[in-house]
Image 1 (cartoon, rainbow, N blue to C red):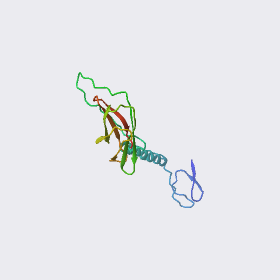
Image 2 (cartoon, one colour):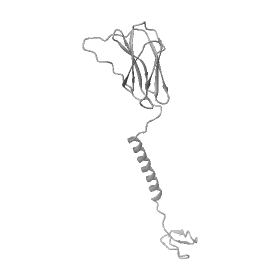
Image 3 (tube, rainbow, N blue to C red):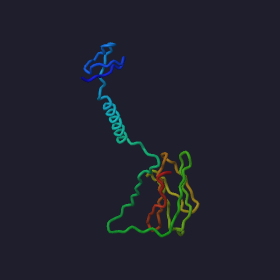
Length: 168
C-alpha cells in the first residue's frame, strides 16, 4: 500500500489516512488545481487590461492629427487657373503660452502676383496678411497644438497652400 509522511512529526503513514496516528494532526491533500487557478486568474486580468486599452486608447505623444485640405469647388467643364511658378516661403512659430507668429520669409513672385495670404488656425479662418517679405502677424492659438495653414491667392484666381504645420 502507498505511504505518505506526516508533515508535522515525520511518521510514515498509509496514504488513505487523513489523521496522523502518532501526533493526531489532520493531514490535508494539496489541491492540484491551485496553480492552474492562479495562472487562469492572471490570464483573465491581462485580457481585461488589453480590452480596456483597446476600447479607450490614450493619445500617443508625437503623433500628428490628420489634416485634409479641400480644394475649392469647380464648375463642371471649367478648369481652375494654375498658380504661377513663383514661390513664397512662410514660417510659423509658437510664442508661449498661446500665440502663433506667422512670417513671410522670402518670395520670388512679382509684385501683384499674390493678392493675399489667408491664415487659418485649426480650420477657422483667422484673417489675411500682407504679402511683403518680412511681414509677420500673430494669431491666438486655440489649443496646445494648433494646425496652421496659409493659402496664397494669386491675381489670376488660383490658390496654393504655401505653409502648413499641424503641430504649432
